[in-house]
Length: 255
Image (cartoon, rainbow, N blue to C red; front, side):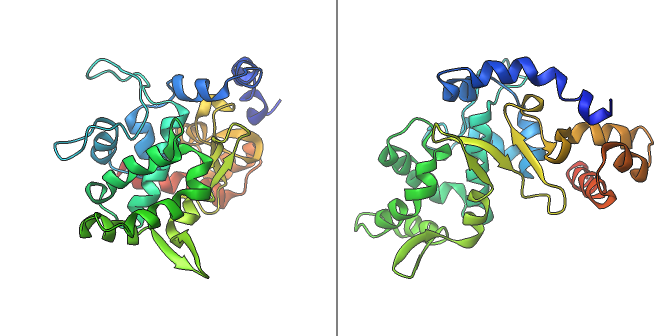
């Protein structure tokens, strides 16, 4: 049995628990899987920025943008569930569009209230209706120029329809939606050759190469231990350039 086959066994019980549940959203929102540093690596976002999204800052309204579980200060235990990763992923898309969070944060609060769903930023309705809601908000007379400009960085009118700008849409298209209206799989856009995804039901929600469900961390551990890229790629049945990219992305974060 090859390494990638052995790696699937520890997740079987977890997968069964998730998919037989009548409330998958509850599990997605309450099982802590990630630390803030995990999110930073997956989304290529500074930990300080993630901290502001999770805990707020002196300029924020106090609204929680990223779902997290309470942990003791300084704890290295996971505190962020899969739905929190999805929320941070959407915020990362907005950040890539060049919108400072202090400009758009009031709009996100109204957006969540308008969508009217729990964890609205991670919901499919954000994907289908979010651009129109934000655009309509920007046209209201009471909206200040700073907020209006922030929304214009996210939304444009194309062929008579309000749509997210391409850079935001590209992120949102990385999400595969579950039947509950929330993400099932998130493809990490930091990788181009390697098809790296996050799926709560596989590898305990850790990033994996979709082909053979190989954990990214397993590849990195072997490389750090001194194994050459060709050997790692051959053992896992991957192209060598896929393994090279995984190592390169990890090195970029470490630097």
